Length: 379
Ligand code: GN1
Ligand code: MG
Image (tube, rainbow, N blue to C red; front, side, top):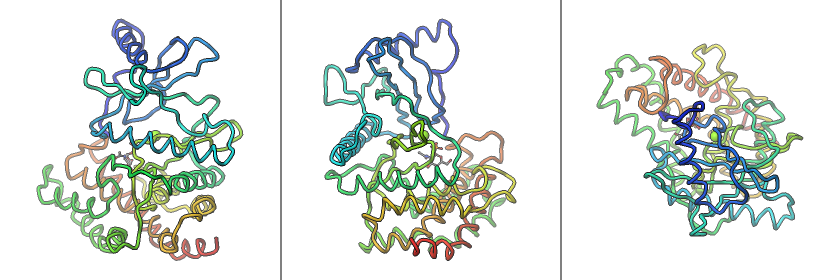
């Protein structure tokens, strides 16, 4: 996504001024301790994220984030979702007798002068603060062990939220709505703003030939056969924290938590983790759906999600595994035809390479649907 990270960069006058501003922002929150240092944290492309170190060992460190309102326009809705979700998970963990709860769910810090508010607006931009989880790591790559752990953790996340008593908002409207994503593609094809439609017509035709089949969830939803549940909607392995012993501590990056068909979390994890290569690898001979990762993730997921999954949801998991590469191919093609406005491109055909990669992954997964179904039925 097109975003800038203006907070990064070395010392100097500019960063000193910026630091002063950051200090006054942190000072609005009900923190403990005094700030010793503020520096960039992580590689997130959407929000700007900083680590706030405190001087006292008994005070926690914090994570300060500027929320990207281009992607998340309704910050009130976003933070209300997060408050409801973290509060509900905290209750569930306590009821289970879990210890160390502060490391197993994110804790957002309220404002000093208004305990009911979890963010502040400075110069028109929203900022929030959460407690930094100590002695935790994130992973960038998956193997069967971490995939199984991730499956169990994301299934557990959905399971804990299955009975949340409040209605959450859609922080990105129609985010994983396949009918909407196809309509978006058709709309931009009709306008052809970058003059690229003719060159990708065979890809358009191929993608659209699956459109009916891939919008099954929306139809079943309308017929009342498929529920929407609270999903994470950005299930990548780097969106969870592990402890030193490789056990999952918690799920992070909660901005996209919203009601959806459960396929979102199951399918989107597999889209990235079960591809033999990166989503933008132009060498299509390397692209394919990795059944070993599929099996490990599915085993973990079903262990915790079986408490709430309906027979139809379970039966449709192979569909979910094909849906997300398909949806991503449609979204990347939409952006390519639009003239590369949404995702950052490192070279002119970058988005087109992503389209071809995801279409190839889709077809590879599609061919494995029966094998997936057999494995799921055995669990
Ligand atoms: C975006 O920025 P990142 O990588 O977390 C996108 C996802 C896509 C992904 C594809 C809010 O996620 O839906 O699957 O790119 N997030 C948003 O690379 O659009
Ligand atoms: Mg993330």
